[in-house]
Length: 286
Image (cartoon, rainbow, N blue to C red):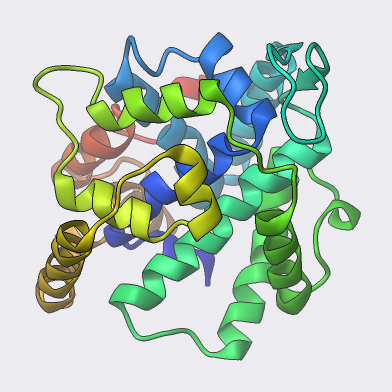
């Protein structure tokens, strides 16, 4: 079920929403501002992030475990102190990227957003399929460093966790978060502009409270831009050939299962677009 959902390139429509939800957690916002190269190298950041995630999802067992160890080591270096008091957090309080509460929230934003976007564009999942996806997502969470007891037992409990977080003071948008969000949606480079409709869609998918806290403008023109884009995508996406509709790492995984360890040229090209390299595992020296 995880492969069925995460192979869809259209899931990237939710990346902006997931990022904003993550930045709404003060620990995440501080970590990104103080430890990330997002602004200096936005394309590289995109590739590094999806290289890790897609290796965990579509890679071989050895590569998935190597990517998980790499991520844990990287997170272990991301520590600091909040520069301002916000929500339940005092100024100067410590944060750590490997802390369970922060990992749990980042994991939740990825899982919830993926299913939200899937059901916007493709036929919605059944309750049984949703439950299965959540069960498999717990294994994905384990690669983040989360134990089964750190995560919700079932989909209903997961929904309750997300609703509670959306209403909690834990999600408190700092000045740092607003600055980071503004720079990311500005594109980071004069030639790298985020389309208006994508910004509008990311904003529309946020809860009203967080949309207001981020200071994101959203008027009828923005709503129309997002809806027009969604209508075009729904119309065109289902007609796309699987070669283009599914991400390169999924094609590579399918080839590996068929006994072809080296992906074909088309898959290598797609991989370069998604992860910045021709093949999963190149980075992990396995």
